[in-house]
Length: 80
Image 1 (cartoon, helix red, strand yellow):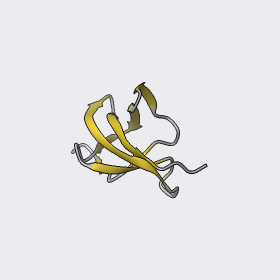
Image 2 (image 1 turned 90 degrees about the horizontal axis):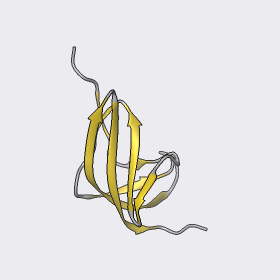
Image 3 (image 1 turned 60 degrees about the vertical axis):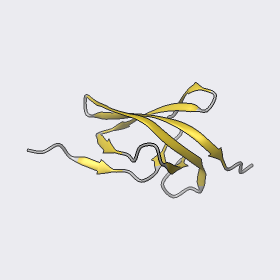
Image 4 (image 1 turned 180 degrees about the vertical axis):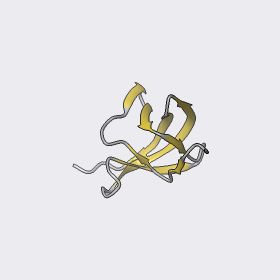
């Protein structure tokens, strides 16, 4: 039985991201997920919502059926 993997082409936070430094965040997601690293990808609150900005993922960690990513926000779309 293989490990089910989901390929993610954007970061969907659902408001659960945690700030580490000024523009560095971590986010834990259920299951094992693959993310592109070191290339700019969209950050959104939900899949349907407009993009919040652009980030580069620095690190992906898999453990106990969860994936934790560390990403750096490189641009922000301010929608007030």
